Length: 140
Image 1 (tube, rainbow, N blue to C red):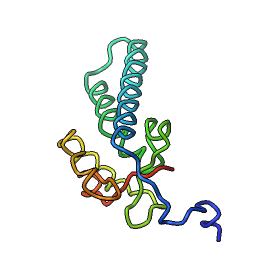
Image 2: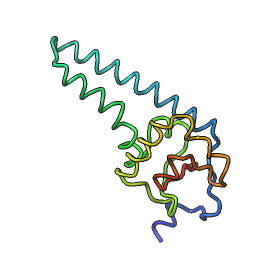
Image 3: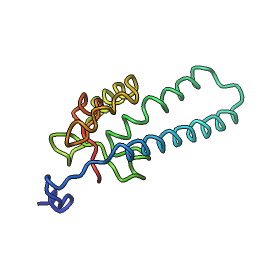
Image 4: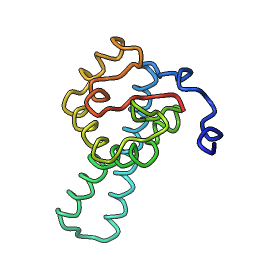
């Protein structure tokens, strides 16, 4: 009963965002990552000489971990602003786990724009990375 009050819409009323919305969300995330890199770079400058390992670790964290963690535990900044969410394809009330969010990101990263070719080939507008991870993008 509690879940029904949190998600009153029936499953057949779920709508899926268009490619343009997903691209806008990705662009917002890109800008957010650049902003984070600028902020962390400025903070590191306050400490003077910072080991390269710290800089590399920060770079990896920002570029590789940002999207999977945010997707698994809520949504990215771009998803939030555009009002879309990544969910489990079998139960859109559930988020995908971290390991599937990481797989989704890796496929998306390596395929780039090619991953979006399948969006218009299925009713849920799932990209290749969504198909690989068992996820679907929905309007919140």
